Image (cartoon, rainbow, N blue to C red; front, side, top):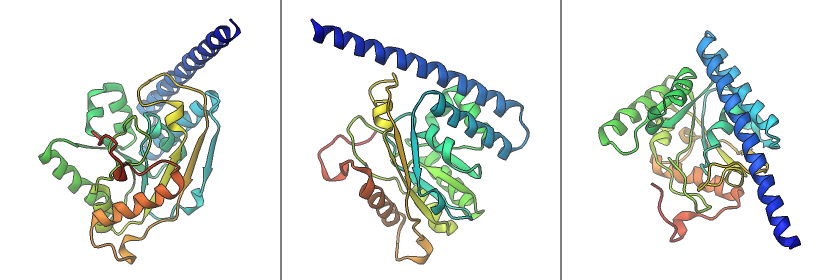
Length: 254
């Protein structure tokens, strides 16, 4: 009987926390949309949207530990992070400097309010499944990198329920090479526990974000974007505490 009551209490606690976290998240998003709508200037909009994202973590009582932020070059660069949960974009928005734009999968265009918010903070949308669109978007990233724009990418493209790090798509790394921008690997830990891949109901947990040593593609012997992508992936694997999905029989990413 006591075990049953304990399980019921835990279930109620999980439900109440998830409900509270969702309310906080919706309020943070609404605040961010208002800021993105009325504020002039791209950098100002990014700063306030980032404050909304940080506010969510504070109010949702999600402890966040950030290490290595000082490793971000003072000049422009490309940040490449692992992708384990829906919350990853919110994490990067909260803790990256306002000079960064985000590279987002094109399917987000089908979510009007989210698309509006991301577009207002200068995000770039890339196609994953349409060849013509993918080629066009790759050229867009190369052009942005050549102009010295800082970007944040999730090179896995999406995530699956299986813990681990999957294959990195080479597009953002090709842009880094042609734009002569350093790559900063970022390992995000804890997001999978807070928002499990097969659920949209938040759980209590903590986050660890590690900014790793930058990789200088133009000073190194990387002959292709694929080699640079793999070097970045290996750096993240060293601290991620999750398996390498390319060495297992785990399902491939969509």
